[in-house]
Image 1: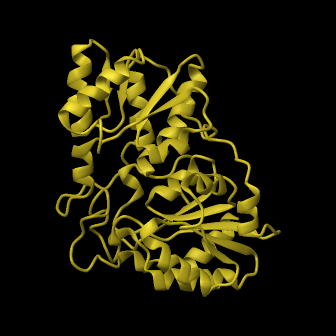
Image 2: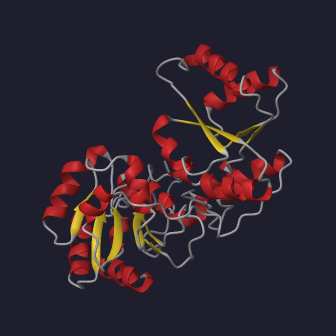
Image 3: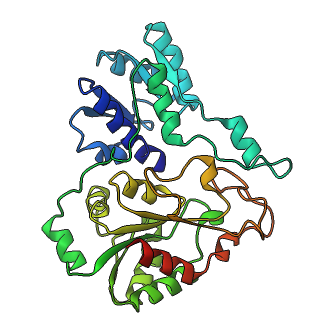
Length: 329
């Protein structure tokens, strides 16, 4: 989801410089809502369990995409499926440019020995490079974000609109190494609640319903959206937040595509890998203590870390989180 959300500012910049363009985004049906407010974009929904399954299914996808009369293909993913599609598009003599993920540099950044600890090119610029290599002009600006969306009456009723600032909290991530411990997060939210200035809104996935509901029930002015709002409704709500607090995960990128201030909390991953939310100040982050955990970043995605690094993210105190939220709002 984060990778998809990061395309938004890039596509907005592309369309700003070439307003005559029409773009077909090839993605899963679930992500279609991310692009729904951009009139120049049409979503082509893939069906990898049905008609687009396997090599034969990818040939069907190629034929369907070719029928839309595309002039060129920008591959922002560069995975096995898109590499197969590349062969098909070459047969049709349609230009096909793929992202350079910078794998060698990322391997050096995450190495346990001879680590090269330096800032790498952002994923947003890597996306932009694909379009530049297709011959388009593209300059990323911090203003390349979506506008705030109109809340529905049902969502307003759920949140109970008042004068308090809305703080989105997305406490989970795909891997343990970049997930702030839930007991500490709950402690931070109680400290935040005690300021009496904030409405706390929890975001997460369908597998996290019970945990987030339990957390919300123990904290006044705290609401969990999981299992209540659909993804399209969550996107609208995110666009109306005063701040989003996220791990190195997708919800931070969803907020950033609306220009919402995002506080990111980092464990065994690091902003140097290029996945910092778009347009955010560098100070809008809290990082695990590299003095105590010098091998950070241990991996790009947070799925690999040595023994003892499981709770590196807990070196960030709850007081730091609350103070940063207050400073950013």
